[in-house]
Each structure stands twice: as C-alpha cells, then as structure tokens.
Image (tube, rainbow, N blue to C red; front, top):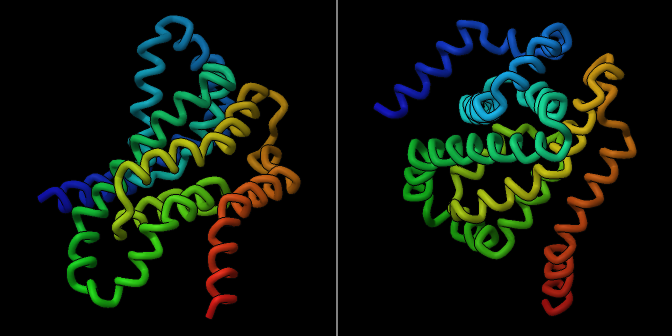
Length: 220
C-alpha cells in the first residue's frame, strides 16, 4: 500500500506538470513577489520552503537546483544553505527509507551470499563512498538516495554524510542565488575550477581506501 501510494503520488506530480513551475525563468519573474512574501511572514516562508524542498527531493521532482538558488536569494547565503540542508537531507532520508523498505531488504535477503564481499566493503568504507558522491554535484541526487537504500548502509551514516557532503555545493548555489540579478543561466554558477575543487575534495575523502588497497596488494 505504501509503494502504491508513493508511485501514485509521483505519477500524479509528473502528469500535473509541477516541475514546470520550479524553473529558473519563473524564479526570475517572481523574485519581487517572493521577497515580499518572506518579508510579510518570515517563519511561515521558511517552513513552507523547507517542506517544498523535502517534497521535491523525496519525490525526485526536477527543480532542487532552482530551489537552492531561491533559498540564497530569499534568506541569504548562510541561512539559505542551512534551510536547503534541512530540506534536502530530510527529503533524501525519506527516499532512502522508501527504497530500503520497498526493495532493499528483499534484495539483501535474496542475494545474501552474492553480496557478502560488497556488504563487507560498505561496512568499512561506505561512509567515504557516500561522502565522496555527495561532494561532487554532478552525480544525480536521487540515484544516490535510491542506491544507498538498496544497501546495508546504516541510516545514521546516510544522514550525516548527506548533510555534510551537500554543504559545499549548496553554499555555492545559495551564494549565487543571493546575486540572482547577475545570473543569466544555470551555467553561470559552476565554473570548471569549482567542479575541479569539489572533485579533488571527494578524491581526498577516498585516499584512505586507496592506501588500504595498496597495502593489501603489497602483502599478497
């Protein structure tokens, strides 16, 4: 029943074309109205923003990037990043739990023998892999949520790696959103240098894994 409810909701959202409203062009056109709404009722705006963000992430609706930009524009770079983190982490956790209870447990039971080595590796270095994936904004957010839900990665590990890993990218988008008037397209936000920096940071997280395997090969 839960699976049917979630799938029905996603199909309804897609057919209703909700994602067409969460666009960069709409943000540009309605930025004055949005600012007025925040000024008139700040706390209600924050609560609505976080709920909207977690719904977009939980149901894999395109538009999270635009919402992050709007968070920086409406609430400032620092507070916007915090609100984005709250919404994105909560939404990702809901998607993770859904995938785990809908299919993850069944997969783990059915292919228990074949997944022994894989699960052992994740138990030792799973948090490093997740953190590295979160640090690089190029990896699809919803795929990481779904993929992690099919593994035995602990919920606590998923939550803290998600919250910490998305902070740098969220801040870049929120900071760019604060200067919304100078942005003409989404391509103006991430430069090649920034992407390289995030990639190097992700590789740095994986250094202990590489060192461990190098030592293991030498002893064999």
